Length: 287
Image 1 (cartoon, rainbow, N blue to C red):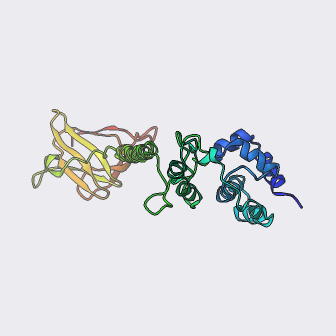
Image 2: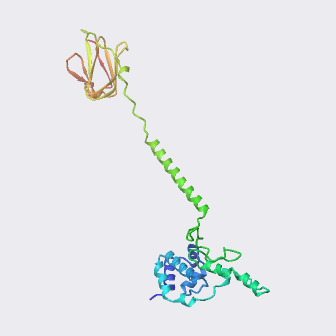
Image 3: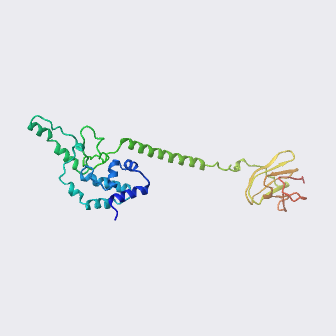
């Protein structure tokens, strides 16, 4: 059965990272991690930190933190450490070189509370002179309840900036998509009020045009250039104009138009009699 150290080392190598990279990722000193992988757990720290470091390292390596912690407790090493004096280099040096026993007792009085504070879960040992050299500084400082996390204000600003930038980007994309989605509306057909139409008088000869399909624009002019009809036609609509002279019919959709020379007469398509091609410009002679 593999030891705790062998499992940690194997998991680290499987991830392809070095001790130094693991130390940066876990915020645990590299010499501690090296000792853990060699099954050396006496790192001169309180038991709570040893278990916490082992758990955090195991979780970082994708191992079960509870399993590693329980296996460590099963070794019984914590019982061997019971009663061992706390290393003063970790919790701060106390000046014991005093002249009298009473002064000595007074100077050393705060030490027990410092050690007790260091042993409290959720806190960290405080070294006199510098907290940055403390091996457990990676642990969050306790808040009012002793178990809170301290958050870097710069990190909050960065996260807020990223979120704000993301929202602005999403709004910009929505605006661009909406702008691109707006296509120019098709030109509306000329309203009926703009249609030019000269209607034949009762008894006058007339020329009729009939639309089999919608026609956008058709123009009828007489030999003098007078516009007799100009406008669109819907499917099935017909228009009649006076046929007093030669009439020219112009449209880009001649296949949709037929001519009726007399009212109720035969409908003639706008085709060339020889080629059979539709003519965009046709002339109907005067009667």
